[in-house]
Image 1 (cartoon, rainbow, N blue to C red):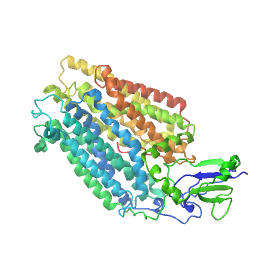
Image 2: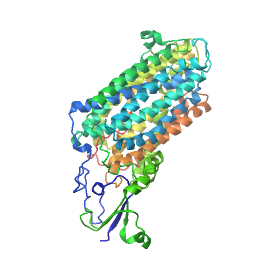
Image 3: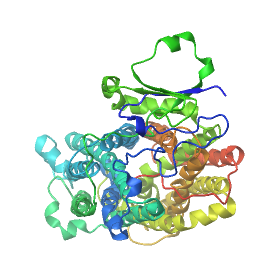
Image 4: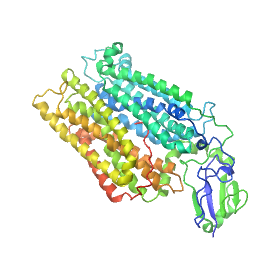
Amino acid sequence: MAPKEIRIPYKHLDQAQIELSTVSGTGESNSRPDNGEIAGSGNNNNNANANRNSLKTLILSCMIAAGVQFGWALQLSLLTPYIQTLGIEHAFSSFIWLCGPITGLVVQPLVGVWSDKCHSKYGRRRPFILAGSLMICLAVTIIGFSADIGYLIGDTHEHCKIYQGTRPWAAVVFVIGFWMLDLANNTVQGPARALLADLSGPDQRDSANAIFCSWIAVGNILGFSAGASGEWHRWFPFLTTKACCEACGNLKAAFLVAVVFLSLCTAVTIYFAPEISLSPKSTQQAGDTAPLLHIQENESRDSKSHNMKPEGIYADGYNAESPIPNASIVVQSPKMQDQHDSFNDGPGAVLVNLLTSMRHLPPAMNSVLLVMALSWLSWFPFFLFDTDWMGREVYQGDPNAKGTKAAAYHKGVQEGAFGLLLNSIVLGVSSLFIEPLCRWMGSKNIWATSNFIVFVCMASTAVISAYALSEHHRGIQYMIGNVSSVKAASVVLFALLGFPLAITYSVPFSVTAELTADAGGGQGLSIGVLNLSIVIPQMIVALGAGPWDALFGGGNVPAFVLASVFALAAGIIAVIKLPHLSRTTYKPAVGHGFG
């Protein structure tokens, strides 16, 4: 059999730390055992799989997830409505959400790489968790006090109960705080999950994921409950000012509570996480974010490749330096590694690695990426405008009006936050049944069904909006106090969407894990590529949803109707294109971060 050449363009690799997949054409097994170590390697540097901690330690170590999710829930439920009270038009309110997918695409994997190599005496993950948490506290404080800061630096001094115009300085401060919050959320998210993986043993992974998801559910419930409460300004009357009336005071108080809760969660995580610092002399294994190993047949080499060997370490054939027979392993020397530091650690390298790895994915992943993208084109309009839709279309309110119209809008926003609370509860309960449902119906059918449910629910928003408008024209004043069938239907709609959302947060990542289980580049890299089919649709919606709604006279229904079309397309393509996977090999996976 002809030998093969394996080029490993990674830095930070010792000879004993090279991670290789099967290279023998005769079907030999790979050279590393199940624990991920190289056969014969004695280097077990900071090996997370070797660690096993008590259940109490795992629970307390990932409490940070609840603190971050608390603020994220407030962000989802309150911030799109609030920015409109500062005078930003509805058509442009979606633009402020651009930072989320951008930072999710670049910052999160970049921070993950940096935390992998962090040599702080306090550990690899905890410094990033602490820095990100402090940034979140600063960001939500800026958001909560944006109206007061704008008042001090140049906005109108007219009382907020009288003035109805734009407050540009407050809007600028708000946007700065909003983008800081997205940046900080993504700074915490990666290291928090990596810390959990570091602390859990191989037989604790399912339990660890369940604990992490439970804290996320706790954060969601507390956050949406805080957003649904309209009494914060009564409990903390000193927070209302000349520039900040009741709705602003509610938001300010809710975010200050978020600061206190996040500080508590951060302190608990940092104190109880038994993280061991990484030795400066330690080296890292090739990560999943690096490009896939380039494997080619030795017989296809030309004379140039024979004569121009790069500076490095070679081990040809089968000897003490090479655990793989008939393989040539090229490892860059420390000198060459240092020359590539600035590239390999930079934001551009992360994105390039993800894009170049797409050509190495299994063919079936193309349909997974397409269905995932269409799914998120249907979900993100709901995330952006859910509570705003409740205030505008269902309660027929106006964020820029005064009196009854303003009261109706803010009441609708509170009811929308309550609907999101029910949505989180349904999501958490549904998560318990995803695995048995997939084993019964198959992952493909479950995922397709979830998209059809989203199609029906998003299309129903147009019917509910039309019925709410007809009731309003007939003079039925249910919006502020009384319960109506429209209000009940809207809350039920929010709750029902928790079931397909639970599927969207888990099944695509499990399908990806199964399809790429034998891929040479690692499942982490495939999950990174799958993330592209989430953030790119988010960018599209953030840029286009507001102007799309404006084409039809404003409101949220046009974006929701278009979202229903995307959901229908996702369901149809899922039925036709998604591969049939074994129902007995389903493994639960959680791919969504905070939110």
